[in-house]
Image (tube, rainbow, N blue to C red; front, top):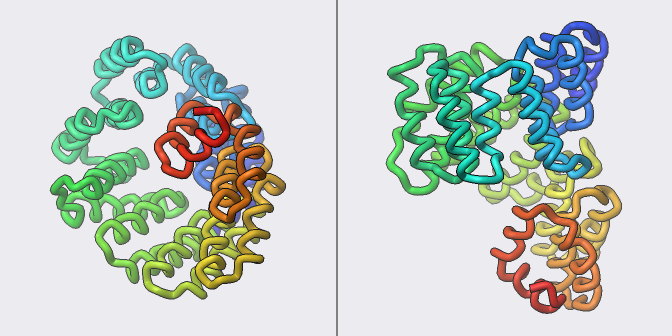
Length: 349
């Protein structure tokens, strides 16, 4: 059993061990404990700046995901990683977040000179991030013939992409090409929550919700305070038609991480369905208080207020938070019917 607290304690107990710090930072980033992940990644870099690209990647991922850190710092982390290690992996990830296609193409061509598994996996990820799904697939589909080290964590990217393609309608034999790889990853790395998430996702994509439930419970047996898995389990129970148990797991997720906006929104939706509008309102109105830095959560609250007939309050909140969103978040709002309505009513369209 691994808890978030035990991982944090392990990091501080190994404050002068760069390898352990890198591993702890990576797992904490997966478990959404971004501040601690950043602390340990930076310490690993301080100890051995040229030893590995991995802590630089963790640093950059934290920046891209955290509402507290500008995206520019994530790009700088990748640049620093490449300067320190000259790694093709760092170069590929720089391409993934490049501001222009010209830079991305140039850096990907450089990265392609490295035919190692790590570099090729990063190249596939870069194509995926730039929404060039077919290019990513062309790289990934060669992996079974080119590489035999299925135990490396980067094989998770291969599994994730093939499952995504299956969901988009592409013909993929996941039972043959993905499930054995996931089992191998779990065998070699039972300490990585991302591998359990792959198994949950596989069964969900295949429509086997009972197996997905068992995979989620297996994950929680190893990581008992992983609120993301609790949230996922709530969704699985919803698909199984057990809304009361879904509510339970949403509540557990909020208890494990009080700032969890997604769990509040899902739980409020369950209460709305029950006609318990007072509880739904209470949960939604908590969002800006429990997670004030997550501005997209406030957008969700504005949408909720509009639906509840509180148009003036909805528009006021939307005008306040919309200009603070990241460009991709604004694009998401503009692509949603309720978001478009708020944009028009607030005069921001």
